[in-house]
Amino acid sequence: MNSTQEIIFGLLGGLAIFIYGMNLMSECLQKAAGEKMKQILGLLTRNRIMGVLAGALVTAVLQSSSATTVMAIGFVSAGLMSLPQAISIIFGANIGTTITAQIIAFKISDYIYVFIFTGFIVSFICKNERVKNIGRTIFAFGLLFLGIETMGDVMKPLASSPVFTNMIAQVAERPVLGVLAGALMTLVVQSSSATIAVLQNFASQAGADGVTSILGLAGAIPILLGDNIGTTITALLASVGQSRDAKRTAVAHSIFNISGAFIFIWFVKPYAALIQYISPSGAEVDVISRQIANAHTIFNITMTVIWIGLLGLMVRIVTKLIPDGTEAQIDLAKPRYLDKNVLTQPAAALRLVAQEVLHCSRMVQDMLTRVREAILPGDAHALQEVRDHGSVLNSLHVEIDEYLAEMLSSGVLTEQQSTQTARLMYVLSDIDRMGDLSAEMADALLEQSGKKHSYSQEALADLKKSLGSIERMYSDALNALSAGDTIALNELLRRKDQVLDLDIEMRKSHLQRVSKGLCDKKMSVPFMRVLHCIDRMGNSCVNLTEVALNEMNFSYFTGADGK
Image 1: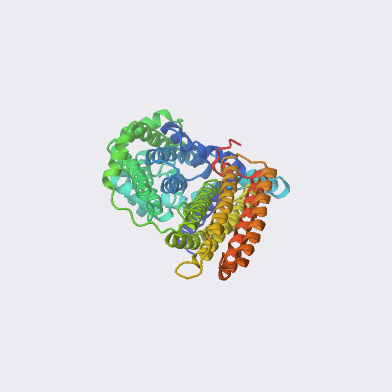
Image 2: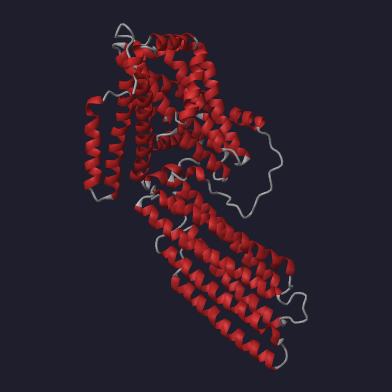
């Protein structure tokens, strides 16, 4: 293998180790943070200042502004936050992503293998899940720096290459070329943290005099600005197919970084002088990595301070660029909240799943009401709609199950999250069963439509009364799950027994009416089907309440419980 191949594969290999270490550290940090991530996400929907702080904090944990931006896009698309809130989170994410560059600026090359070994031992020996994740985080931290060290080693020969130094001189003298180079690098790698790490490492290579940087801070800043522009492509891609506000959020991210690059590009040398003044002194090759990190941090803080005061203007700009119009017709069979872009962020993904399950539960509540109201008038159209909604509900159930299965198989959930997710799947199963039974009941009631055989008015009145009891039981069970207003299980069981007693009485009354010729015997089978559905619905309501009593409610996923 010649020297050129060694440099190329060394760079690629070092970059692969760095990105793997960064992704592993993000995953393990999320697991180590565990329940705290719910509380952090709870801050996202407050005022703009809290949104900035929460965005920075989430990005520090996720180690990626793109991941935070994608999450904000998912939330605003789901209607869980407003456009101004999502934009303020993106401002914070741009500050949070600078932490990675600040960490990289530390010179810990002598301790890389200490971190790797210590992290491995802690994760290998300890049984406690949280401690194991802390160990894995330390291990990933070591890998991150191993990747940087590998890239640095293979870059050293480049400093003595006349062709390469001339090319770098062209970039340093023409800031626009630097911006384009930085944007292109980030577009390819899809990680501004990774490309900034490469930039810090490359700038730390000494020139011919062995003291000054081969690139210099003034040459590095345009590339840094380009990195910030390049990272916006991830958000733009994530917004494809999403709501109008989601697209506006992605565009706001682009405007933030592009406007910053446009402003700072005119003041590269004065800005470089300012950064050099406030950064540690020393030989340029020794301090330039920290200078680049500081330039990155101050750029994003400055732009956040500017834009947070002009948040209303940003909203007007993106609304003008993406105006209101006719929304595409919503496909009811498609999930309203789920977003596969946030699958690797379990706290955020589970929040979306909980909203989707709540949406399904409200659909079932509407189906129950429609069936009850359609019984006496014999509204065939309403009953047909209930049957159609049953099919929609089945499709949503499959989509949610597949989403959760993908999340569980990825291994990103903590033990507690996995337990709560299993309970959520159990709840979804009972909600889907309630929907199936509502559709089956509508189907049985439709059997009298357009035929000479029909239910008696007395039978329909009894059905309406019984279904009203089920409606109230289901509503109480949902309140217990969603708001923690837990009804006593004994009370619900008592009401279930009342429904069962009414069921027996209705069967007896029906047989008496048939014997007297007051009720059509041809309707006995569908009538008994309806009664059987009501009985099974009562069982599902009891199941849902038992889950609520077993310390599971939707506030766990939204972080509203404060735990």
